[in-house]
Length: 146
Image (tube, one colour):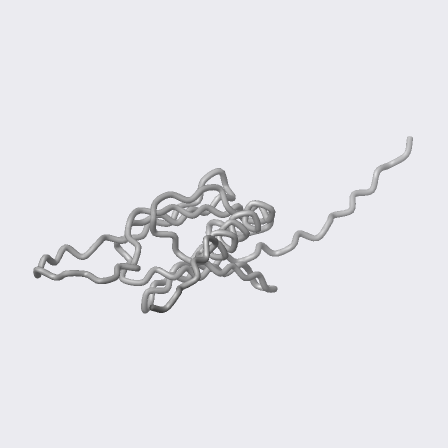
């Protein structure tokens, strides 16, 4: 008979990694809340022209997603990934895909043109671009001394 050593911390590294991701997001101040079992992965990048957000939404269509901006600087992506309702008398041996509603909110930095946000959805990836506002040059006003 073969002896198998039991590891009581099996899977603990995944929990620690996920908690680290949450604390990193909170520390950056970019996330407000997350809801549901399905939690899409998001990349946020910033360059000279603006901010770009890429969200992985596999198995979803653009009609399943809603993007809003509230309070002038909080961008929220909401949606629901629905479970396929096929009952073909299958006996699943493993189920790893997650489903459910989600909401991801990001506080946008100052100086973004929230009136010119563009979004596209292709191959399960949502891309949102928010351009930066043109910097306003300070104006000088001369004051007469009396």
